[in-house]
Length: 463
Image (cartoon, rainbow, N blue to C red; front, side, top):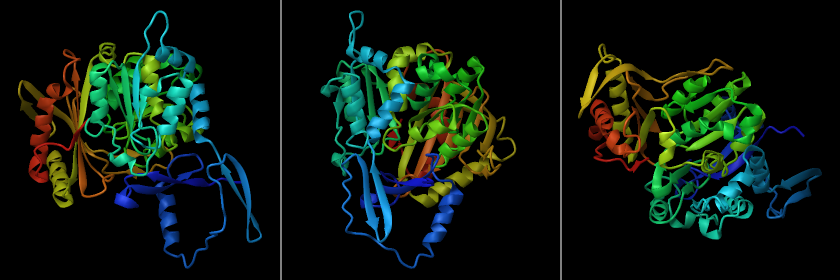
């Protein structure tokens, strides 16, 4: 049988279902999201449908593992129910050293247990968390929470960040925990915190992992052929790539991001990849590995396990082992009026293209930033040479600091403005990121006039 792909029903930000929180997605046979030309063709077909048929009498036991055979009319119809948790765990065991992680979590005569607190927020990752951390790695039931998937997520908002997962942050801060993680409803985003609720940004997590890949069995076998990040992701990993002599490339963020990554691998580039909005790390060196990391509900483990075990230092020490560490943050202004936000982006882009903007100086406090580059990021696909335009406004300064601004289409209503800030900090690397970034944030607000256009004095979420 030729497989052309599969349909994924998922908790999502697509405008469907109750409270606009349900999505139907199509993934191609390689496991990645369908490219635009495929979804466009599907849409055209939907406009020509005259009738459709259903078979209401088929009683398929979807809770039973195995193959079930039916006859529809005079044609055979086969349904196979698989244990995706088992398949995923088996594959993770090929990538990470489970015995070492188990020893880390359970402790030994020389080391006390590495105490974790993992929160699935009543999303789809619950069974994976239960199987991996409790059954495989020997953590206690007290080390996991909200692992039963609920259709309404128990009334919570399953967004793993410092705002919506504040109860996890409080628990780790007040308890004797070395590591905490939370996952969103469909499992493609996560949040990682260290002892004392030290927030490990996705960008930092990527950089630390990239700097320690020699501890992960998968990369011990295959080696590494390059690093990648989405454009808004902070440039911490760029410095690791330079230090290790690896190729570094960046791709647009959004739903086609995995496809861009896959196309780079097709032409021989390996990749270790992260996005700030998804908090997702993808470990891959060849095409056939991609489907495992595109399964809804399981991707977050790709970073949480190696951060806890392979790196083994997820709080203060993670910054001390780096060179000069880029400090980064993201400000989300959710459910803003769309028209003023579009006007703001147009005005900012116009300002960025004015003569003299490049090389202009912008100051706040005791910091002065000189513009080196200003553009609306575009990307050419290495396979079909197609160009993706207008992927986000970015201002890069001479010291490597960056301001990136995008309008997100993943919100259920209105517009979400995402402001990304990252800057290199060579001295107080363990300090409060919001304090260290304050001058650059002020400059970003001054240049963009964001508060005027949105009418907001503060972001909805800071990560």
